[in-house]
Length: 79
Image (cartoon, rainbow, N blue to C red; front, side, top):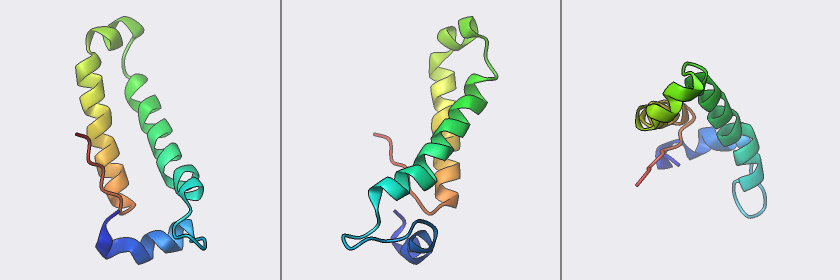
């Protein structure tokens, strides 16, 4: 989470007694973005091409997830 944007994230997700609610964070931000982007990228490939170009598809998904999550003040760091 971008430390400079915690207030914005709080407004979007809410907060419980233990801090930002992980389930709300997942259901309101992570899951919809991930599902949408997976469908978007995978939908551009045929099944055979997707398997043959797995690395390209993965790179496209990772790039878009980073961009979309950054818009929600979340920093995606894939090691």
